[in-house]
Image (cartoon, rainbow, N blue to C red; front, side, top):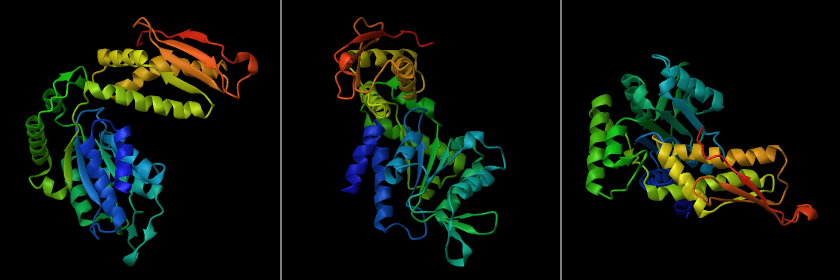
Amino acid sequence: MLSFDLQCALNHEVVGQKRAVHTLVRAVALAMSGLEDPDGPAGTFLFVGPTGTGKTHLGRTLIRHIHGDLSRLVSVDCSQLRDGQEWAILERQLSSRFDLQSASGGDSVLPALTMLMLENIDRARPDFVRTFITCVQSGTLQLSNGKRCGLRGSLVLMTSNMCSDQIFEAGRKELGFSSPSGDEKEKARVYQFCVEAAQKRWGKDILALLDDLIVFHPLGESHVPLILDRLADELNQRLAQRHLLCEIDASAKEFLAQRAQKFQSNGAWYLVKVLKRFVWFPLADLVASRELHPGALVHVTCEDGERLQFDVSYGGPATPEDERGHRVPIGADSDVG
């Protein structure tokens, strides 16, 4: 089934946010079935949570899986907007991205399953957010040329970092990662707190204008190996273009996880920095200096808990005969910088 395959793919790339994944997948299935509201978008969602929990990443990953790239994503970061420029910037993004097809009455319509993503909407003027959500629910955006842009079958995603402190506290935050409490009552309390904050900022009927408000809870320690596996897969996709492969064993993953917990304070994004610092950069140096040849296998280990060890072996058919089986140990610094 489409929904099952898409949900599995998204859960692999967006760790620890199954409810959000399930909600967006249902909206996609609705849009693709043709059973969505004939006048409005397939779904309008508000994602609330701390930085690094996957809010923006989920939206971008969904569009990439559906369309193969990000060509149908219109993203506006409200933290970079100036007062009074919100509509102009949004319309400019739409106009530059799409050759809007003409519909009845000279109006325009967005291509199916286009995503409008407004990031950090708590940084925008409340009246702009309120007006935007109201227009979305009406199914059209008013353009400056007097025409309207239809939103049927589109996805509207808004992200906000509001209530981050309360969400972290509920998750028993420990330097960016939390210990999963499994307390559904506590999650329900946090959800209600976020709802009340949204109502205070954008109006009592804000929930009636949204399909859902979803809280992104902090990631737990059990999620760290899953995130590292995903990042390692991404690294190998890049290395595969040069016929190279990297294997990171359990001891090296423990080393990376400890460094992430020691230094990070804002979520899973720091794991990316740690992996780049200790794995990607040493590999990039080897590739750039042409010390790795096609068919190389780089095995990353940590024997003393202080340094990563890179062993390079050869054995692939594309490797020169005299280098097959040759192993080269490479050390990596243990500082974050």
